[in-house]
Image (cartoon, rainbow, N blue to C red; front, side, top):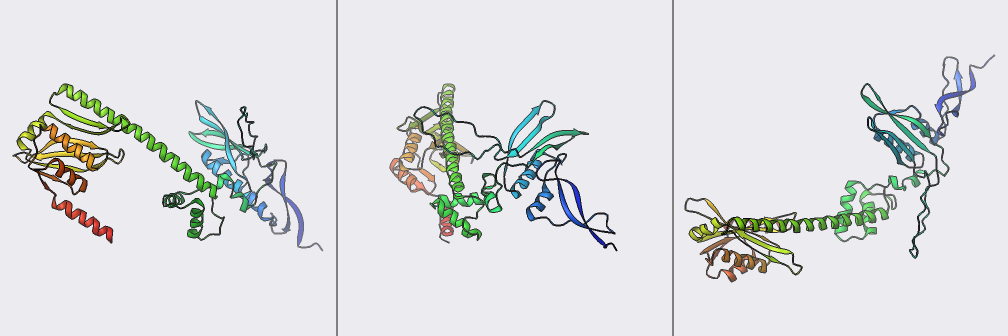
Length: 395
């Protein structure tokens, strides 16, 4: 009597992970009489993962980025990483071909050494691996999609285990939150190896199991410092150009208004340091309403690092009058003294009876030195504001 269960060999019509369509995955199963399809026998763990996520010719993706992410996940689970190789463009479709290959695909170009120049011989990881996934863009009813037209999972090198594949450059990512923490610790003076140890302790993970290496942290910090230095250099150049442009504007206004006055200083490198200006109407208004002036130095340019000061007063109708402006390199006694001397010269030597200013020790000393017969007044709100800041800082 025949057994109710018979052992059969059956073929699942699915492409083998090797990428060859002539090769199929075979499984041993036990067929039941009431079942048309036999139950599959579990293969090993790695084969199961490959069978689930292995790409195949004809597979469709909405975008090429989605395909790259999918192939990248497949590669990571199977012990390698991928990179983008070639793309082809047409006027009608734009980019219509995408080639993704194994990170060890191709061969490194031979570097020519100049005479007398020493190069470090570093072995390339590229070994001509033929694993790849090629995509083609198709447009149907106005909707574009990406179709796998060629796939191969044949490698000529050893695939890595999980604890090794995470160390490949493609998977060593420093996330934004970790970047901020690294920069904060670096600014605090922590050395790189201490920063790595701190991150391991904060995350509660075993040493050496961060998703990045110590050299990745070092490269990140060095690159960020380089970017900051380059930005500062560009900003410094822009500041110099803008200040020179301001001087050109002052010269042009002077030609149109003979009563317009301006002055500036330069540093030891002949770069403009401080600049002040005032209009003819402002000079005339000061002769009538310049008994009391307010020197406001509370403005500072974050982009340029310059301090902006304004002299103004009030006429007999209660309207604010502008007497002059100044841009200062810093808030030192020397800079404030120059600003007050220049203002006094603009106003024909007319010294105010009262000057109101912010609570600043350098400015106070400059006023005492340059405006000896002038009463110096500090607003109550400025004193209370400084007091509140000190109280809150102490807390």
